[in-house]
Image (cartoon, rainbow, N blue to C red; front, top):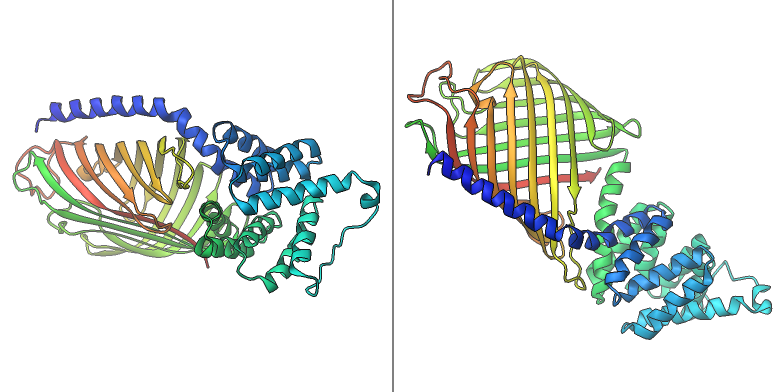
Length: 470
């Protein structure tokens, strides 16, 4: 397979991916409205949530649970006419008995407020367990409609003492807990609904809420753990070097225990291990090392981070122990739609997005400056739940000041990834890579017998990105 042919294939796929992305960008963006709206709602931003819910409903008029949600938002804003309009839509169009019952109760309560005798009567804000369960539930909805979220929480909690299996009320409580920033309680409520509810819409809503809550619990925790674990097997199919090692296994494990010391700063211990199966002291294909120490991390902006590492290092191929000092400046962002969950109502699957990433660092153990820039254009198809299949093009350039041949190259890749319907499951991938070296001289150990200019390889493996509160 010639180098020119490989470049030709890559150029064709790049054009086709761009065409597909532009055709589906608006389509997938609409599907992203609902996810972003719940994110705003979970963080107490009702105005932005309302705008996105209404944009979503323009193309999804059959999703009556969203009309119910919009009705409650308008009620909290004291816009009773628009609240009534949304509740009436649910009554007239929903096929879900619980949605219809809830909408009718809300309409009855709005009507009751227009009567002076009812307005002058205070709402029961201290529901007792010795009330009937239906009375407690009615009290809870009345308090919710009146904007008393704390009172509604007390009522629904008392109701669940008698009816602990009511998943619909647990879902309602989950959203109320989020509004009160009781994230642990909210997660437990959504988790119950996800596990035990027979209503597929409620299960989907809970799974989406839990995804965001996992991030919220981790980002706000005083102590958390993050793990990056990359594993891949590389098959070299074409090279100018007759005796170049083949079938190399690559593994990189990086973990931080984060102690939060400010809104944007953390510190703690970390470990970094990089290995491959074919490198030897005489034939170095990658920098191999074991590193353990302390780090300080500062999130400068949403896309820019600084990290300083101080550690003990074992250089495997050079057989040396060293003191490590590594300042790292990294930047990354995403453009486009990257939906992570497909509910059962939605027929839309396509998402197109672009990832950009760059890093610059100094590595004292190698006395070397490194720089890397990477780009990925991705077309993702949501399959159901958390599962997806995606196809991507990638471009990456690496360079260092010591000009080691294995640290100075340009990679062009085309690949596909798959994620099963499990929130924490690794992403599986396979990709073809054309690697073009920027340095074409022999390495110092001179184990090669030809000019090192390019490789063509197939890479397959899995990637884990794990974050959790400790």
